[in-house]
Length: 210
Image (cartoon, rainbow, N blue to C red; front, top):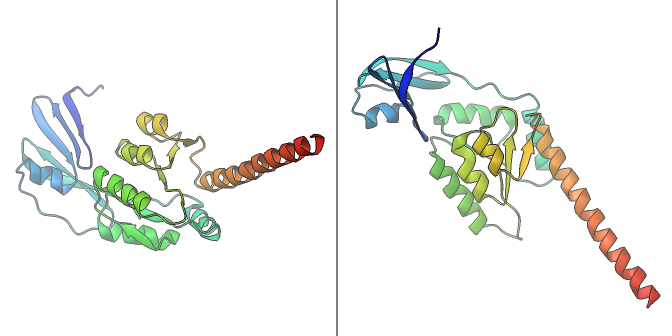
């Protein structure tokens, strides 16, 4: 049975709007419904609530809860060992983001962010960085694309990531395994050392010949 819908529209940072069998359907966070003058009260529940309205009338909600990726905690630990600071940027409510941060060991987090808020955070990090350190951003959704582009190094998940995020990323993790981010950083560092060694060695050889 195929579902027929019309005028499907994704609203960045808020949710989606579509027309199904002549009825306008809204599905997203509470701000999406409030922006369309729908009377709704925020529910206090663990996880992310997706509010649904039909013809500008609230009809219910669905609660989704994030499952922390396997080895995500180990990734944060290894990045800390490399001296890399990690920050969690999310559009979810603060209680959910705080819980995930505590599980994986991220000390700094920011919740209820729109796509432009994430990009602004990345820009501020770039402008205020010290010792010429690079700013990287890892994401998989279409809302993450602006931040992936704006960062010095953009990571995207190749399997579950949106096409736009993958196309604009500098590094694509094809296996969607968090630890591959750490592996790519280690490989990049070793590659840099090899390149420097080759350049210095070739110059020394040339000087010796001269």
